[in-house]
Length: 186
Image 1: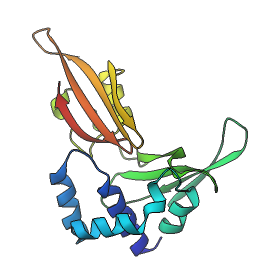
Image 2 (image 1 turned 90 degrees about the vertical axis):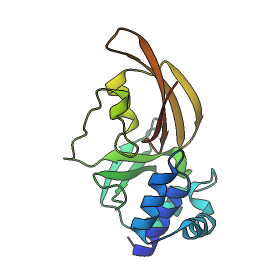
Image 3 (image 1 turned 135 degrees about the vertical axis):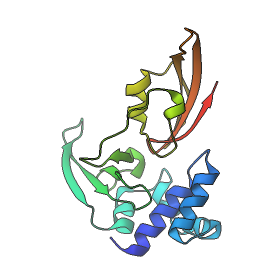
Image 4 (image 1 turned 180 degrees about the vertical axis):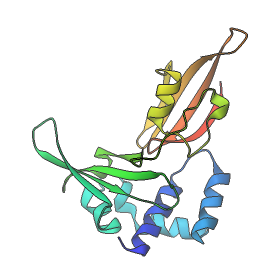
């Protein structure tokens, strides 16, 4: 993986994060970059995330993965899951599943690295952007009561929780690439 490709990919992902400008600004500082670098990366890598973007475009940008697995698609043809470590998200890895010629958005997002335990949230106030994955929120709060906007890689879900006094409260959780971005009480 080239350092330049890794930086470009992280900046490109940051350009699409929704709902938490403060955390994106902190990430840019950690990378030694600014919004103009993020915008330049977005313009230089348009073929990565567009529907016409291909699996091989991401592989060309990121290079050799940390881990690689072969899977079978529903049609019986092989798919490859590649896993990359991105320094901005320690404890997580970015995965993509596909094969040359398939759109990048076939299946991609963040997952916990093996051996890195999740800290299960007990209450919506425990949820922190970039600290929880979609499946972890589902496990903690059950299936969502409503789906909001869904346009890959973004997803919104409404959850219901019981307060100590027995009332029901609802909150929305917004994810990007399976990673929590924002929580808002409904």
